[in-house]
Amino acid sequence: MQSPEDLQDKTVLFGVTGGIAAYKAVEVVSALRRRGAEVMVVMTDAASELVSPLTFQTISANPVYTDMFAEPKQWNVEHIELAQRADLFAVVPATANIIAKIACGIADDFLSTTWLAFTGPRIIAPAMNANMWDNPVTQRNLRCLTGLGCEVIEPDRGRLASGAEGRGRLPEPGVITEEISSALHGDCSLSGYRILVTAGPTREYFDPVRYLSNPSSGKMGYALARAARERGAGVHLVSGPTDLSAPRGVQLHRVTSAEEMLERCRRLWPQTDALFMCAAVCDYRPARHSEQKIKKDEGQLGEMVRTPDIVTTLSEESGKRFILGFAAETDEVAGTERAVDKMRRKGMDMIALNPVGEARGFGMDANRVVLIDDEGSESLPEMHKLPLARGIVDRVVRVLSV
Image 1 (tube, rainbow, N blue to C red):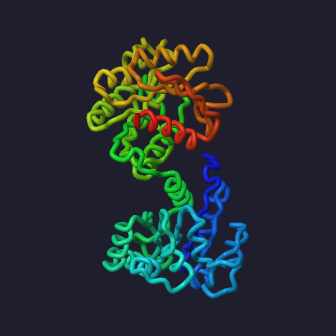
Image 2 (image 1 turned 90 degrees about the vertical axis):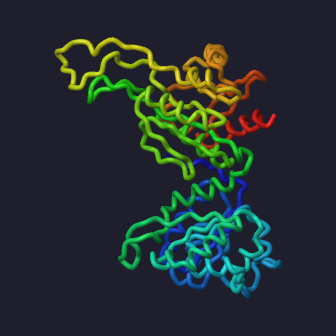
Image 3 (image 1 turned 120 degrees about the horizontal axis):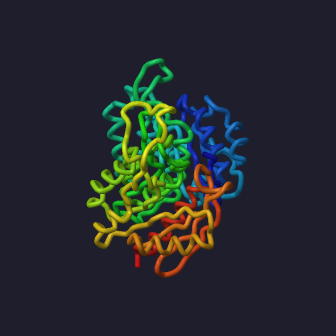
């Protein structure tokens, strides 16, 4: 999926320390820049031995800070000025040494001193030898930082620079970039809420090799799950077949058919406070499923029957829980009336009218919606599905806060 430019007007203070994974940090800085962020890079002396500061200066289009006692680029106390400018401080990679120093409040170089002066959200992405990661001292230091509000992106397991296998690999740059983006957009406005999100298509099989489905990619539902998680909600994502990975912190439940989706949602529904029904559920399924492949010369594939209506079923059991539904329409004018009717008939609190066609909707990275509830409507312009999802969640937060 093409990345959105969702970090405009955001400034990231980006620390690089002396781990061999420092080369991957270049790609993270590049990705943050593509998404519109200003990135200010601070490097330790050890990091400068592995990757040239000129590389980060070129990629970030900003001076790189390395020397605590160098002549200032402008007349100020630089580590204080940087700490005041930034919206977030990330250290990628974070070695065992820097983790120990910042956990103990040691400030003996530009990076650690700036860290101590910074008051905003912080992220570290540790990378090191597996034995260093498992060392009780390192784990104690990480618990200390987590307790102080620092987010730790845990390393992956795999082949390390030493040739050994174990936990200690820096996660892929795309994962780190997404975590930074989520932290910059996060707040606690949905803290304490438990939200059930459905996404993707369903498949209704005629036989072991043929099924009825639709082109839904699941991108909108997955973006909604991520946006709700960014706002502090606990999120269960019930997904039909897709190639997408669950957003970090979201509990993923994979299903195939409409019946399976309903069964899983009904099991989770009593534990949740709201439903975002974004899945493109097939309206029909074969009346009979053949255990063997149906041959072409056997005639018709058979009678079709209606699949269960998941929203209606859950709304009848909802009590005072909030339900957001979606309505995909090819005719926006007539579709508005149909969307309002669908919202009221199925017991929803809000519906997102999703105009679909050749250039938007299923399978696309961008979309637009019209949000409708009993108070009126609000159009969200065409944009990448992640910022669109954040806009939808903004509206839901306002409604839930009333």
